[in-house]
Image (cartoon, rainbow, N blue to C red; front, side, top):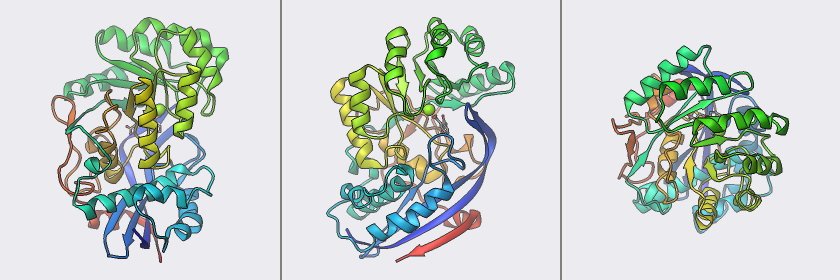
Length: 369
Ligand code: OSB
Ligand code: MG
């Protein structure tokens, strides 16, 4: 594979409802799309999953654009690689910025799969034709609003509910949800809002039978997470902390978590995501696919990733309509009444892009050769 052209487009899309986490509120997304073309004229698409501000991790769209344009594209264009799995090595001089690099890497996998005539999920070694789905529900102004949203999502068929928590909106909120929905698979995500000094508060969550507590402590804190896990019955799931397979190995060895959330962008693309998956599988640690409020391309990539064998828990990959009045796909991602997504069987992404829609939403573009 030799890439001859890379097109970056930044689109702007309002969410159908704001999404609030412990680190802030998002009403409108800005998303960088990466289109790659090789010397045979084959194309592939990727989506950069970083936020608009560097609050989830250090990445944000402004930086991602520059990293791709000034550092990643020049290293990849014209270089000969045997497969998409080797693209990451071309950009390994760049420290961090994995979501930016991952958007480019994922586009190369899509190109490769499409060219070979395989569905992307099959190309990466996936084994499922149907994936189980959960939802992530943002922090709400009132508990009543939250209970209503949980009910709506359960009625739609979703298999597990994740709620966002932060100090002051945690134990009482979880208690209310649990009281109303006693047997639902329920989990909470703190997005790094606590520290070890809050251990008492975190332990108070143990009584609610949560399937897991996601990323309570710092985005780069493994050791204190091990202390929390040792003190709690509830399994800890790490998100922000796990950027590489090596981090996954260390986290598991330390006892910092019992479950890992894999996000394609956070780990820098498919090659590393597969390595994280394989490490976890070898250690008997289940994984699930996290979300970053993706548009259709990122959503389709998450569906493909979720077909790997050890993605045994419902992820945060849900229907397009929960986020967008109109996605950038010809047909939106839909979820069945049983809370599942049927994996597409067509080559590459398996979803057709709505190119007119992408053009209409585009606020900047650059073509690199
Ligand atoms: O921590 O999983 C997270 C959204 C933005 C940033 C971080 C996270 C999330 C979500 C939403 O939980 C997942 C989704 O529905 O895409
Ligand atoms: Mg999370």
